[in-house]
Length: 394
Image (cartoon, rainbow, N blue to C red; front, top):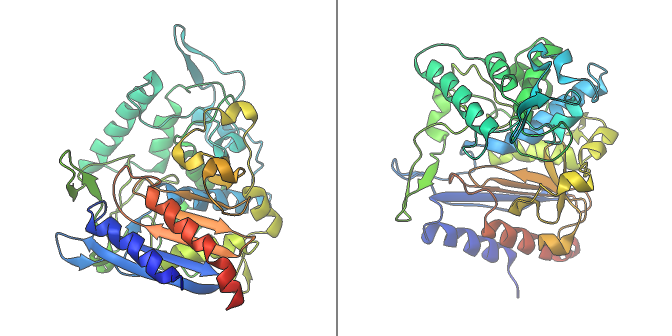
């Protein structure tokens, strides 16, 4: 007889034993009940600390759906409008230029809006050696990181000014491109709410969602639970990561609260956020977001023209909106997940599936730099969906 738990255990254990990760864990909730959890390997191999249920991991881009929820919460309250220009809240973004090959900086045809940011169609880049704006962005971010390392305070608004000074890669709304859009929205939340982004998230999301281990820094008494993240060396060995990826930092003196990559969390904490999302904004009897707000967030917002550039492995068969993929084509995605399933992943291989149709949350945590969507995630997700009929009969 098929044993779902044994399949999940085998797949994750193989990742550890074959050296693709130092440690990994997974949690699956169906109809509010836990149908799978296990952890394998090490959170920190050098210190001999095993991967556990309460291991704190760096979410990287799995921060982004949380940022989208914060923005939509303010929209619900009438504190901002999705068509508002970014410069209404962050004046440094007024008059941004667009980079055109052969012409240099040209005028933008219109200003970016909050809606452009939510859908990654703003033209705001990440550091990228392959483009002129990307090179300039790298210079700006590297300078801010050096300031922090020298003991200066470079906060979220300092990052806003730096990001705004770099020309856009294309006209607002013209294409889809991954970049600092979520970080800019974090800056907007600060301006609108009158609180730091971290304070807003703590008070409006993390406290009501019972997420005590989620935030922009790891307190000293919890540092022993923070997983090490690893680079893959040329010889295939995994070695501790040294350096800074996008300006993120998890010390208690953190000043830049990155809406795109800055949060840390645990399996259980993030599952509370995901459960709220698949239950129409409700968690433990508390309405965190409106039902229609969550439905809005979980829709493809890309036009056909924009979707042409949304071509990464994690988006094959998916649309995109509010910093999340949304399943539109099972065949192209190679999955039996429900149409409309949504979620996102992180730079170190973390992954979440949120499926309101099946009342399902699937979470996979690992910490290998540059991993993004790994083949084992697709296998684990397939195994989970394949067992749901069996779960219904239980």
